[in-house]
Amino acid sequence: MEQKQVLDQFAQGFDCSQIVLANVAGNYGIDVETARKVSACFGGGMWCAGCCGALTGAMMAVGLKYGHDTPGAADKKDRTLTVMGQLRKKFVEKYRSTECRDILGHDLSIPEEMQQILDKGLIGSICPGVICDTVEILDGYLVLP
Image (tube, rainbow, N blue to C red):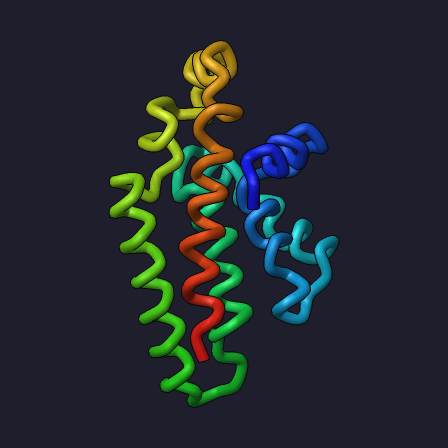
């Protein structure tokens, strides 16, 4: 994924979580529209500057690939949690935090800080790189058997 593609999707109104999950949706049994709907509430750290939307979108993709859907599937659950932990670790190695507020340096849930984010153009300058990096990290886990 290229940063220009991310910026184009931002311009269309899509958020980090939607871009990441939609990027892999077709490979895991859901269409892009469904991926965007499912992940719509997770951008901006669930709009409270919590866990980065790119990372939550990636975690949803991990669930699609490895998640358990039957009772007593402890082995599948363990595999999912292992992959989730590895993905999170790689993300933290790159960004030192999973929190949107730490990555942007401002809390977008506080109007004054959101204005600073907008004035500084941080969403357009920081988030595309985070999304592209997250997709790249994710790709390494989704090709595993």
